[in-house]
Structures are given as C-alpha cells and as structure tokens.
Amino acid sequence: MVMKYITRFFCFSGFILALAACGNLEKEITLDLPPYESKLVVECYLEAGQPYTALLTKSAAYFDPFTFESAEEFLQILENDAEVVIRHKGEEIKLQNDLNINPTTAKIFNYYSTELVPADYENDFELEITTKDGRHVTATTRLLPKVPIDSVVVEFDAKNDTLARTLVYFQDDPNTTDYYRRMIHVGSVLNDPEFYFQTGDDFVDDGTVVFGSAFDYAVGDTVINTIFHIDHDYYLFLESIEGAVDANGNPFAQPGVILSNLEGDENALGIFTGFSFDRVVTIIQK
Image 1 (tube, rainbow, N blue to C red):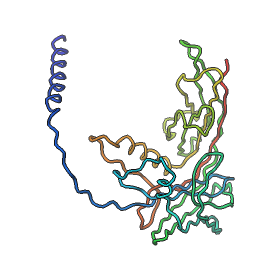
Image 2: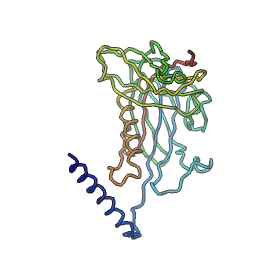
Image 3: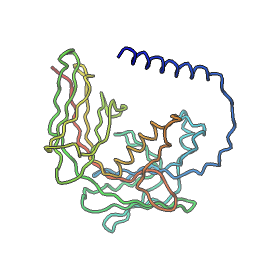
Image 4: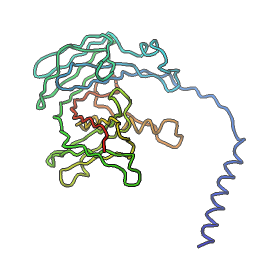
C-alpha cells in the first residue's frame, strides 16, 4: 500500500517536472482568422401585465476590444431601425425603436410598446423581426402560469448560530414537465443575484420542491427568494450560456454553442420566451 502511494507521488512529481521543463518552449505565432460576420442578438421576454419590450443588439468577434466602459461602446452594438412585431390571437403589436430602461428591474431595451402583455396561458405569441438590411427572424412562445411559493423557512446553522439559510417550498405539478429558475438577492432585486440556477423537475418525487441555500445570512439581512416558471427553450438557452462561459478561455473545452429558439435566414442568437415568477422577501430574524 505504501509503495502504491509512493509510486503515485513520483508519477505526479514527474508530470509536474515535465511541465516545468517545457516552460521555455514558447513561440509566438500569427493566425489569419477569417472575417467575423456579426449576428443579430435578440432578447424578448414576455410577462403578463408588463409592456412588450425587446433588446436587439449585434454580436462582436471574440478578439474585438469591448469593455462596456462607455455609453458609446454600448450604443455601437444596438440594432436599430428594425421592424419588430408580436402577434397574438390575430392582434398585431408593433414595437417602437427607442432606447429605454425599466426602473423596476433596471433592464435595458430598445424596442417597446405601451400595450400590456395579456395573461393568456393558452395561446401562442409570435415574434417577427425584419432588420433594416433585410434580415428576417421569427420565433414562437407562450406564457407560463405562476408557480406560487408555499413558504420560506429560516434555519440557523447548528455550529454557528449567527448565520442562517433559507429553504423555499413550492408544489410541482406531477402531470407536466416543468422547468424553474431560482434566484436569491440580498438587499434589493436591483443588486446582482447572490445565487441562481435553473433545473427541470425530473428529481421531484412527491410533488414538493425544496430549494435551500448556504448558511450565509445574518440577523437583519433582507433575503429575496424568487422562483421563475420557465419553458424548455429558455432552460436550454440559459444552460448553453453557462456552458459557453465555462468553456471560454479553456483550451481543453469544446467551444460553447448558444442554443436559441429563433428561426429565419439570419441565424440569430437569443431567446423569445414568456415566464412568470413568485417572490418572497424575508428579513432574517431569530
């Protein structure tokens, strides 16, 4: 047994020494990359009772300098002067091209309508985009009903009773395949989320879902738990984005591919989806 561990040690050490010996084997090379063709990027989210909005931008090449440090850089990637139409039950809603921000969510959009999205969970919404240079994009989605949170339980750590976690309980319909996104904010939903993930419901046995957290919260903290009910397209989109981020800069990883429900001759990136959410604000108390 001792010899086995000694052998493993020397094999590992030899591997490290081999890597160190290659430290000077460096050579700069110049690659002639083909010119990058910018793609249309679409984000259009439907929420019952909220105005129709969409953000249309243009993708950039991997090595293009882009820092988001100035408004000018952001304005350069906006896709303006497109015709954006959403159809629902025979009605056509045309979105105006105007840069704006939602003060409640801090989300930026450059197309909008003052009409509100109806709470219709039975009929399709259809998106059609025609850019100023003739590119054409379509997509179809539906709204999903809210899945209410039953309760949020605060539980203090048995080893360190100054820190607590939250447990979120809600019910999953066993007769349907559902997808959820869970987010935790501290202080305000305008802050970056402390924690988030998305999942299907294939792990649920008895219909009750419990999402926990780490023991990260002190007495007086405001913890905001949100459960989004999302569709399969949005779930795949989010998973593919996270996969692409993880692969970025990793020479041993496969290049990330963004999964999208957009169709048309543009090969656009992005998502057109409807969702709903329930949210509970909890102030940590003993």
